[in-house]
Each structure stands twice: as structure tokens, then as C-alpha cells.
Image (cartoon, rainbow over all chains, first blue to last red; front, side, top):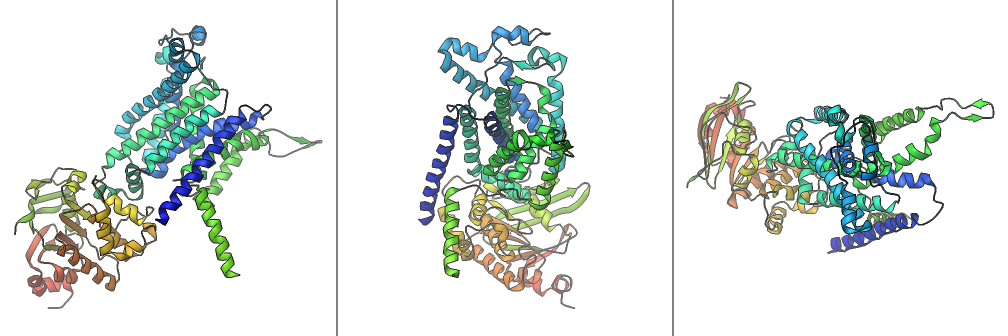
Length: 374
Length: 237
């Protein structure tokens, strides 16, 4: 009984906490004079949260070490862009090619349903399609790749991600992908609330999945494949599902990134991006959803804002501050990941999740303990 | 009594090397049957073949009259055969309760009765219900491994060296449990290097050597057999 009571308190506190975050995001869009850096960090951080969670679902919860995330994001981003380029500037965007897709999903829906409803539905359907195409591709790649284990799987997925990036830039696909030129002219967002809502829904789905019997099977596979198989868990099926679901959400986050950047270019989705996401997952804690979210906001804040100064040559009077120059930020990041891997292997959260009730409980226990000792 | 499991001419190979060389084996319903033998005799391989974890090259594995060879492990588990793997292999980062629920992964009905039954059998697990399995002692992990397998509601439970790496007093406890499980009507197929204990609890026993069955008999008979004594019980002739 006690257990149940604690759970409901935790649920209430969690819902309250989440509501507060959304209220703040909502208000932020309406307050003038918010530093642009803050909104950048929040928007990009939210998008990275989703892809970090999707990677964590695979690496942290199913124990499949995959490095294909950037590739699936790319598929999502290109899908979203290609089906939504507005007719007005299509010929300018596809400067050198004859565009194959001569429609814009969002525009069509806008004409049919009116501006607001059309945009919402159009973006929603496009995001879903972006995720689905990434998922289909994951299914195909998974057929040969998921037979591999640990580092071999990592190398193979990394390879496939690079192959995707190369294919997209191929001349033959240019009528859709615009070759190595960028795609633009699709719907984007100018607020913080909308990405928060979409990312929130997606992460909620992942959380529900992880806490279902299905998720328990994923964790069993992570802990001991042979025992999981002996318990009747179909390894191939569950690994495939984890891979597909993870890629689905990576695809959606890729599409969101496209919306955030307002343009898409294949070169954004290099393997360096996958490493960034891996860094976030490791710093946040492999096997912790809230850890991945905290990690991604922290990482984006550092790379976009707080540690920017490392890349700028700085003079104090006539004295040139040593080491500060373009690229030094990456050196610092590399040192940070080495320190994390060597000394804080569990990251910020380990495998735990943030829980306000748990936090309150711990504080109470500490004070009780303190009282007893005194 | 009828045979719940019947193996005919089972051959299992690992990359061309025959680990099991055409054995015949019968397990009567409601009995404890043990398979003893030294390292590399092919005991574990036999169990893995029954559980579908390795594919037999030739031979028949009949369970309740249905052919198991060639079926996948999940199909085999749902037909009523579970394996307690060698070395316990609990899911270390999951709680005791989660471990038990994984054992019943393929069942869709209510688990409350079975959880109660397992906790009844192992009160220690009830105490540690919310603890991570990795923090349990070796003996407790073995209890969990057995409890997890019971959650699938098996007709036949196969145990691969449940006494491995456990203190003698814990081993005695485990064998008590094996008897108790059997009393509740579950057939047990047991692999052991601890032949002494195994022969004591077993109704029927097989001795395996380098992939073949050397002899068989009731537990008592084999325990008294001079050859078995010399080779597996550590008593001089």
C-alpha cells in the first residue's frame, strides 16, 4: 500500500514539474528581450535530447552499441524537407536540377484546411513520415547488421551512416535531394514551445516503452543475452524492434533539426554528430532518460554558449591569452569525455532517473539520520 | 508413468566436432533425472539442444509427443520446457521482482499466484524483492535463477550445474529446493558435476562421457557402482 502512495505522489510531482517546464517555455516565447543564446540552447537542446534518448534506448537499454544515429537523422531531415518545399521557391532551390517532387505537403494541407490547421497537420504528418522512412531504412540495415555484436555493430552502423550521407549527395538522387546543395523553403519554427511539445511527446512514448514488458525484455537482453534467450525472449525480433524504434525517433529529431536550422545539407550529419550524441549519452548516464536530457542541454549550452570563448582569440590589453583559437573548444570537450570515461563512468545520472519524490524522500531520510546521530 | 521427454539419436556438432554423438535419453514424468559426467562430456550441450539454444545436427527431441528439434527457444519455452542456465546468469541491473517477471515473459495471464508461489519457496527473495539482482549473494542468485525459470510454469525444468561455485551448505539448500519443486509436480532434468549430491536426489541417472552415454540406472545403483565411484565420486576402488 505504502508503495502505491509513494508512486502517486511521485506522479503528481513529476506532472507538476513537467507542466512548469512547459509553462516556462510557453512564457519564454512571449517575453521580449530573451537572450538569443538561451533560446538557441533550449531549442537545439530539446532536439538533441530526443536523439540522445533514442540512442540511449539502443545503447543504454538494449545494449546494442550502434553509431548510426546521424545517418537516420539525415534521412529524417531530408524526408521532411523534400516533401515540404514551397512551390514559390522550388525552382530557385533546385537550381541545377528538375525537381522530382512537385508538391509541398504542408502547402496542400494549408490550402485545404486553412493556414493554422494545415500547418499543424502538415508538420505533424511530415514528421511522422520522416520517422517512418528512417525506421524502414533501419529495418533494411538491421537485416545484415544486427547479427553483429558490440564494436563490430558500432563500426557497421557507422559505416552505413556514412554510406547514406554519400548516397544522398549522389547526382542520381539530386532531383530529390538537390545533391550537395542545400534544401530550404520548408516550414520551420520560430518558437521554443513547439519543439518542446513534439520532443516531450516522443520521449514520453520512449519512457512508456521502457517501462512496459517490452522494455523489460530490452533490459534483460542488455544484461545477459543468453539468459534472455533461455527465458524465451526472441533476440532477433527484440533487437530489430529496438533498432527500428530508435531510428524512428532519430529520424524525427533529424526533421526537427532541419526545422530549427531552416536548411538541410548532408554535411551537417557527419559522424562527428554521432560522437556528440554519444558524448551526451555518456555524460548523462547510459541507461537514464533524464540523464540524456540533462546531458544534451548541458552539452549544447557549453558548445553554443558557455565555452564559445575558447574558440576566439582573446587579448587582455596587449597580452594574447594562450591556447585560445579556433578548434580549442573541441580539445576541451575531448578532455572532458576522457575525464568522464575514466573517473565518472556512470555519468551524471548513472542508470537512475530524476524523481522529485525520490529527492524529497532522500532529504527527509538524511535529516532523520542526522537527527538520530545527534 | 509416461516419458515426458524422449531423445533419440541426438547429434550436436560445433564446427565439425561432435560434442554429442548420438545419445538416447528418456525422462519420466514427475521424476528427477540427472546427467552426470566430467567437463566436456556434452552434458550442457545436450541441455542447450533441448532448449533450442543450439541446433542439433540430427536426432529427435520429443516433448509431450511433440518434436522440439528445429523449434526456436521461445516456442520451446511456451511449450513448457525451461532452462536454468549454468552460472546463474541473473539480470544484474534489474530488481529481483523484474527478474521473476522476465521469467514469465511469454505468458499473458496474471502472475500474482506464481509470484506468491516463488516467494513461498524462497522467502529470501521476497525480502529482497526491490533489490538489484547483481547485489545478491551467489546462493540467492541461484534461487532467483530457479525462481525465474519457475515463473514460466514449466512442466520440465532443466538445471545446468546449480551447485557451481556455491558453499556446501548452500548446495544442500539448493538440492532441498530441487526436491521440493519436484514434489510440486514438476519434472526435473539436472546436470551436475557434484555427482554425489545429484545421485542422491535423482530417481534415474545417466553417466555421460565424451559425447556418449556410458551407463544408466537408478540413482542408488549408480552411486554404488564401482566404476562411477572411481571416476566421479572420488572414492578409491
